Length: 308
Image (cartoon, rainbow, N blue to C red):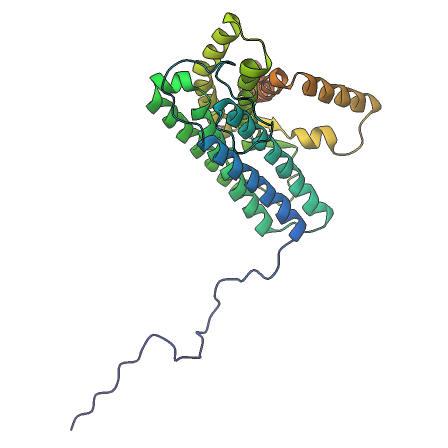
């Protein structure tokens, strides 16, 4: 009788492991920096949640004070679209605070890690990519009513550019990078430039006595904002150098005059926040762009590097 030998199985016997190196297992994480980073994500999540409560535009009319239901400032259960739009904008700004602090906390506690860097980018993709894109659609009802498909495409392009910018940053960042400048507009600053207009719209519709002029200005901004968001998206994936504002303004020792000017600037922004926030955000978006264009015009030969 011919006996057939059993075919060797590629699977190891039960209870025995393969030889070779498997995936590395994460042994420990830094608790405090991770909590700050997750605070960024939580703010982005709630920004998306309150934005999703805003219904699709059914008319090109801009909301007026006559139809706005006044709620507590931080109410998360409001059905008023203007309130939800404003709240989503401030949640994105609160997320920027967490994003600015998590890296500093990690360095202070000597807990910087590759895990923290990757987690930070994942949270930024949600808070500064998806949330502003969705908010953009909901904060321009007049434009959405006439060009619904176009505004959704622009929002998708914005979110895609934010994710591309974050992925490129992770690949190109060096160990000894001092973060004094960025190549391309940082995604938190881009999100701030969109969220700032949500605060402006709330100011125009609720905190300001409405007139024909304010309604006309509101309508014009609604039709310009999607194209502004498209420019912001392209600036995120560009190679234009942008300064690191937090490090420039707060890191190290500064002069007494610098401190006084910073305090007065913060007070001025707080007093007229509805108008100051979008103005400051737009100044940061376009200031380095104009400086780059000026240097390119004055010295075209040395600046041969690609714009993207």
